[in-house]
Figure 1 (tube, rainbow, N blue to C red):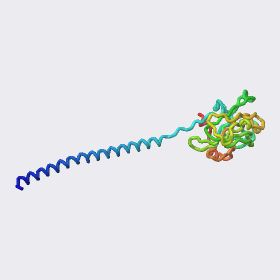
Figure 2: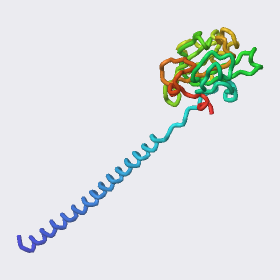
Figure 3: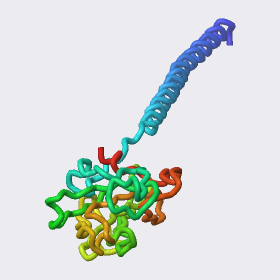
Figure 4: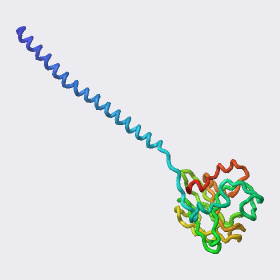
Length: 225
């Protein structure tokens, strides 16, 4: 092969090599660009997810346990310290910090049935006669995603229609109030005592002796507003 032909062959080989290199180089750049775009997309998704999960949850608003509930809280509110001497009702048998909220009845309701309703979706766990209450029902449910037990006191026991372990819906009628100053209310006036105890354990105490123990209970009025 002459030197001229060898020169031509070398030139062709160089041109071919440069063409192949230029072909692959933009593809590599395209791959890098694509990877960078994917990384940015993942970062956006992660950021969005973080914002979503950190959004605070609003407090649960419970259903009214009795019609026109807030206007009925006129005597014993949550946490009130009661003794037979300073009590807003007479006669008074108890001493301690009130763990629930009392919803009073009107004079016109003394001889009529006053319906009581479930404040949340849950399960009826207790219906019985209890000292200090007369008829009492206890519902297990969740409020603000936390387990609670709800005590409905001073009910006519025979009027508690749901069965134990039966599911309840918020707003569903549970019973009617017992007749005032009778065995149906264990001698108490006609009213609803509503207590909300934190956790799954059943505690129907209407009063505690240590103020710090009120931390185990929830003020129903704050959830009704």
